[in-house]
Image (cartoon, rainbow, N blue to C red; front, side, top):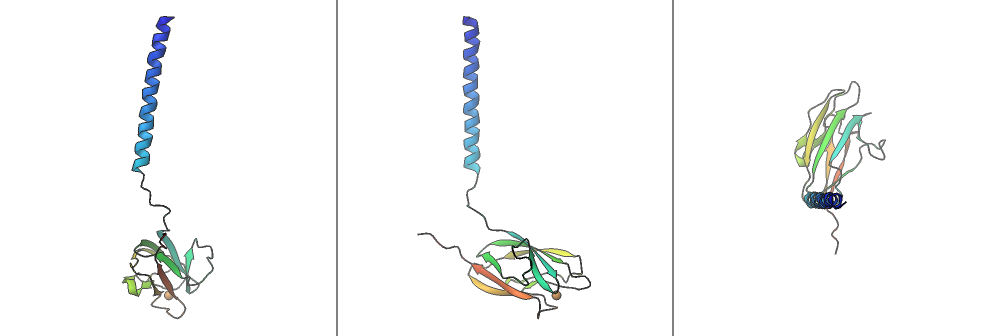
Length: 146
Ligand SMILES: [Cu+2]
């Protein structure tokens, strides 16, 4: 009986040590998790379709040449894809110094946009069809809480 209790006591101690180790591990994991709050979308897919630009996944996918809104200083990945059969398109952010190749139907290219640090509005366009394929990119700053 006492022998049984002895093993039981050792088992209990081991269990407590194990629990402490587990808790320490959890605390370390929590401490290591960066807390930057909710992150804005950092990748978007823009397609050329029907002689306009459209943003895939947007709530209003049918909106032509939507205004793109990005936080100041952000780094945004743009996947630009030509879904216009028989047409060639590019995507140019002149003020940001970013332009895609001229893409044939079905081609796509990945672009990195370094969003300016100052709020403002900049044009984007297709250099081949600037009359129908042009829109605006708005840079906003996060409202500061008091
Ligand atoms: Cu075009």
